[in-house]
Length: 207
Image (cartoon, rainbow, N blue to C red; front, top):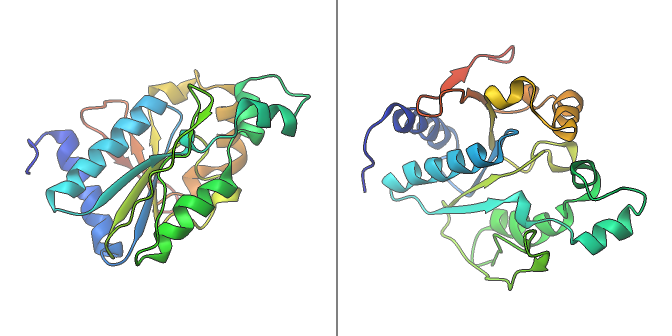
């Protein structure tokens, strides 16, 4: 179904067209980065809706559903309090992310994959729902610190969202991530979302 044309939708269509031009065949994984969790998820959802216009098979996931339990975090780093810093350092189960989602998705064929494993709000495991996909499926995944070294090479295309929240209100762990990892130097596209309804592409030194 065709979406109503707005500046945001038209911008997302240009991003989708670029991705399809470069990665139109086979399994494609797109990562959405940025410090604003709600804005990041909304951007990923809206990009998925744009792909649906072309009847593409789209799957959505979030890193927040691949975290260690609080008990496991405490076991891994008993010296750290339950803060954003602990989440940054040992909070995510990247091994599980690779094992049950990324690697089986990239294999193609009838291999099953899981788009969520853990509910951090309930601090509980999610009963796995194994899914399969056609050959040209697209997975869009958003999350904190999604371009850190442990995840390099997993995404064919990545977007870094920047906005007013990045001008001084970022958490210490988010600021550390931006300073240590320099995602601007890694991603495929940097997008200014200061105006959520009219995002715009930002040119970087890599462009």
